[in-house]
Image 1 (spheres, rainbow, N blue to C red):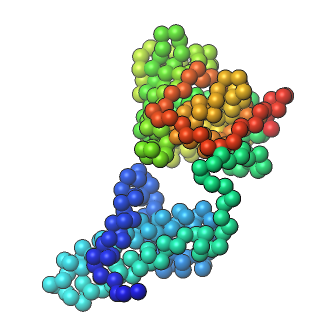
Image 2 (cartoon, rainbow, N blue to C red):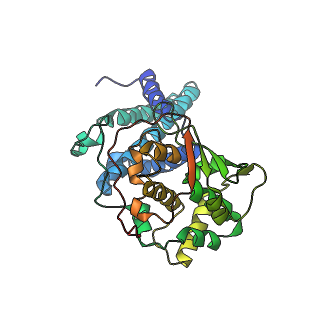
Image 3 (spheres, rainbow, N blue to C red):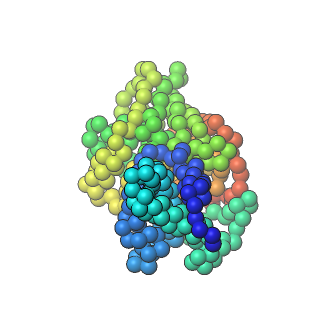
Length: 338
């Protein structure tokens, strides 16, 4: 390989940062923290020699290293230009560091499958994927042992300042990051509640919904919301970490294991899936969850984890749903929590 120059290094850094400039600020802050840790250990590959990491962790660390290295390259080259007339030796040192980082980014281009010989997936992204019935992991798995009224109990156990946010998550299945942007609640003339959500993972034509609107049944609203709205209300999550800790503490006091705010999203999905055979389609569920494809919903909840239905009257989204997955299984006839 020919010797790196400033133009090539800047081009490599620009290509990386072009894909991260639309990230949320907290996402890039998190990537930068990971990069600093990797840099202390001599880079990504040196880190993986010292510590065993899983496949999904490799992808995250790779993204973090590329983002951090690209940011450093730009900073180092700016400093090199500033020091060119004052201290040529120091200026050259900065450039060499930038060139080494650019070379490391280039070396990461062969992906995880090639470098670690992971077997390629047997399905194609443009074909339906079967609904997974084998092992239920994470927060979805945690729903199996929870009582029928666990959502109501955990909302009541929360400090007052966190209840509205938890209720909105329970009613809509929205993400905490979407609540950080704020959602609008509007009472309807017939007693139902309309909730408008701006998507947190929206990328035009590629990922997520820019906006979705859910209408919640009056009975379900009065049962969970614990107050009657008379005018449009703005609900916003001010501090995601503070809310998460309060939620986990409330769950622990009630003896619930493996429960977090995201469990409410899984529970919401389970309620809609239980109503799938007679009320909703896969497209409706994708709209309600803020997805642009009906593939991702298989990771959220299971019909047998239903705890009284979704309470949804309608779900509309800004973009049409792409269909590329298999059927959702019907719930067991006894419909008991499993």
